Image (cartoon, rainbow, N blue to C red; front, side, top):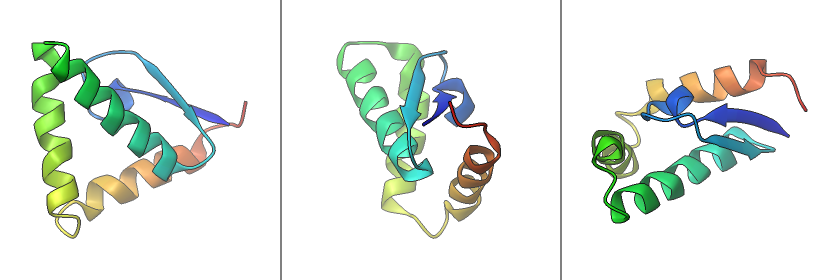
Length: 78
């Protein structure tokens, strides 16, 4: 398991996501952003909009995705 925070993934808070793969971390961040915005957390709106754009335009978002995968790979397992 490895840990990345919402802020590590471009969000505004320090909520920790733990997962076995970078893809699982990204999916956890997506769920977190959806839930935060649905609960009325305005600070998460820009990150949520960015994430929605990534899902809609994955080829344009490859730099972000590859950056997350690289950062995840460098993390120590816990």
